[in-house]
Image (cartoon, rainbow, N blue to C red; front, side, top):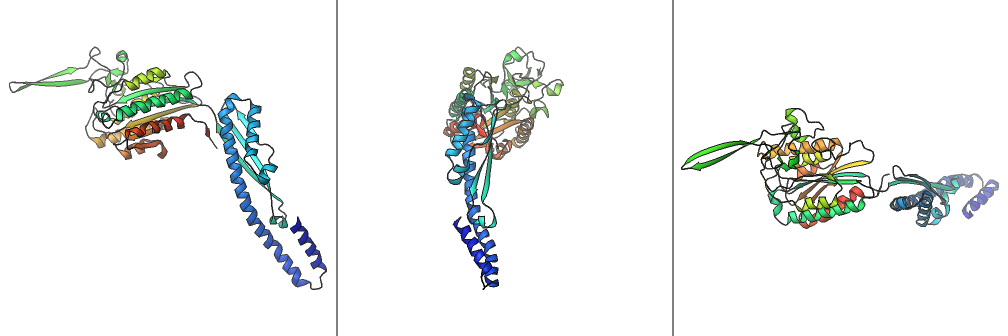
Length: 423
């Protein structure tokens, strides 16, 4: 006020001064100079105040979301306003009264729209007495309905460097985190998909129409220099539950309906007899841990079949029926695809590059369907392939020692279930 009064007084003096024109022109010139200088200073103050207000509103949104389920709407609003005011200072704290707060308990969102006023300094000379600073934020609380497939490499190389032991520990820890995040019955379901060159399912599926029994194996013996070979066809009575890749291009898809012959799943002789079976989506936490502990490292690597059957557990159609439709409100589907090796063998070939191309297509099919794909490379494996399989750059993880698996799985589990800002 003192500066403005001084300038006004000097203006009146200049109007009556006999020295007149020169001083009058100087005075006119000084007003915009003072105003622009003030604008620079006030802009800097406003920028700082805006940063402080943003931080206060964001932290209030997160804080409120964490407690929203336990508080009434009135209590949530009161807590937000007190939190914002406590984190402001100066003019911002003085001019803040209350924020515009919208609480949607169906969508589980809290939207905050807030503003404060900052008094100007020299900018007052050009008629700007205050600046209004605004900030908005939105957060969600609680855990959405989640379906998570763990497609886990169970090949022989996982037996080295403590990888299988570390994987079991990490996966079990993830199950505990998801269990703790559950607030409603069947809110979170998880499937376990161990894979090598094949996958294994319960033999109780043997009469399902989506299976076909036409695979054969040839065994040869040599007696006195003469080789004798015998070809045996798989039957329902001899089938131990192993399934190989479907005919291409269905080997990289998950058809909700399986009708044509080429879409059927080939029941096969087990290349790896101790391969652990798939556990479809379930919220039976004890069963999930049992399935994890039952995994055994054996055989060669076919990442494609792991990705495809991980997707199959998340799709509401055969071969499994536990998954909800993709369009279910507030439903999120995830897959964690973990391997420590490069592709070496599938039903058709031992050409790693050819199998890589199938893996890439399987990952893309999952992502196109709406499944969020995390990939984890354990010490070894095709880095580029796994990076491309992940839904986003930040959803690819790489560990240089097996001991790093637990913190990686913990981080993924918390990303899936945490309260978060959505603005």
